[in-house]
Amino acid sequence: MVKRSMRTLAGGLAAGLFLAAPAWAFAGTVPHAFQAGAKTIMAMSHGQAIILKTFPTKAGLNGYTVQVSPGHALIMYSTKNGKYVFMGGLFTASGTNESVRYAQKYLPAADKPQVISPVDVGTTVQKTTNFLIGKADAPKQVWMVADPNCIFCHLAWEHLKSYVDNGSLAIHLVPVGFLKPSSLPKAATIIASTTPAKEWRFDETHFNSQEEEGGIVPKAQVSAEDTRSIQANNRWMNAHGIHGTPALIYKNPHGKWQVTPGMPRNTAAFVQDVG
Image 1 (tube, rainbow, N blue to C red):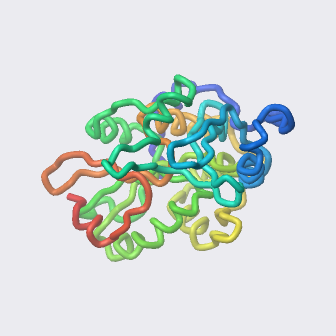
Image 2: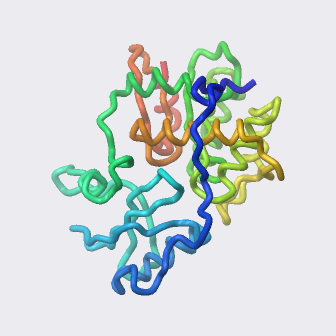
């Protein structure tokens, strides 16, 4: 059973995920020194990304403001030769995260990181469109924001599923769709099912790690309601400062909301910290 966002049921948010035309004229738009990394970003996104800005970094990497779908931009980095592209924090020896500064400076206003409390995230995530994987009465409950084509979501699921299967952990899956053109229709296909948890498991069991593609085959016709549900989740994610997947939201043993971005490094320690 899928729990739907009330905003979606009330009419949703009209926004198209796919780009109608090639988003970026390569020559003359991106400075020559940044073109190798830009080519890699475009290849990874199958030509769907928009390079909004480029900038140098203190770390000697090339920085890019990349729109991966309408209303969803993020900061990416590449090596000078463009062979390696990545996202995440750039920390100085003193512990300063330069990525936060770059995000504030180079992201569009709507995508700039907001100072949002874990309490707000934990309270509002329960109002998103989501579905349960595991037992409703499991002693540990986690909300997981995930894209069906996200390899780190896949890895997080692989590490957590044994806890779900033994009944100690339940995952409330909040599906989003922004990483690839197939992400939104895949996510919408999953929530359209009467057994979304089963569809999610299929997506992960048949995940193609080399291509970073989930195994679910999107329906030829995805309903407008299901599309709006995923778009609403995308917007919730952006509005609450979550700019990547997975994101894990839960209460700790003291009853306080916590937000863990990315795949936990130590699965056992993470599960132990879930109240």
